[in-house]
Image (cartoon, rainbow, N blue to C red):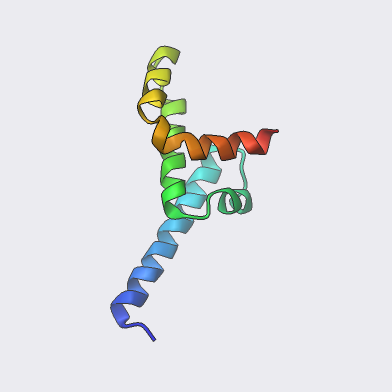
Length: 87
């Protein structure tokens, strides 16, 4: 049995994960269950939020492309999963 701090940390991580899921579903057409299936880890959800921020930004297409290229290594697994939903 873990100590009180481990339990608190685990509970905080779970709450953060739920918060990300709710936020993502409010910004996309994905449902909570789809988000959790595609992006089970909190870090995946953070990367998805980063991708959404780039795509939804009011900058022009060239700026979005540049930002995506800057982050392609980090965001490519997220992009691949999203495209997988479409095909």
